Length: 65
Image 1 (cartoon, rainbow, N blue to C red):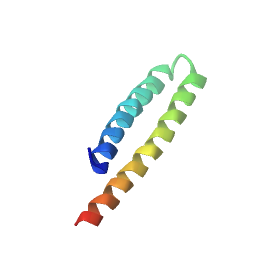
Image 2 (image 1 turned 60 degrees about the vertical axis):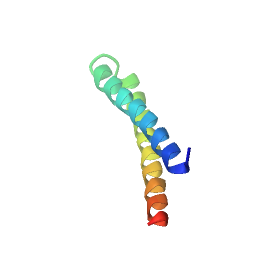
Image 3 (image 1 turned 45 degrees about the horizontal axis):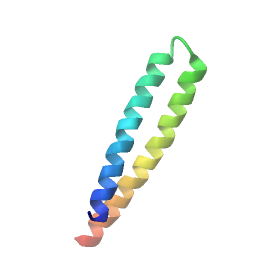
Image 4 (image 1 turned 135 degrees about the horizontal axis):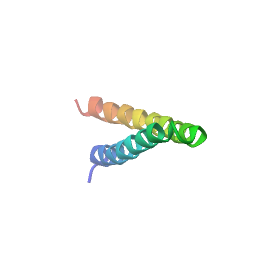
């Protein structure tokens, strides 16, 4: 398995977690604001990691071209 496919696989897993956290934050908004904020904060941290992986993928792609 090459590095690009590892990066894409990791990105896919993080995206699934990100979507779950965003949905959880939305569902908790009316009942528990503090828990909603925590879920949203964790989702933002994951989004930052996803963006870093996309940058790495772009870097690898431009190196092979």
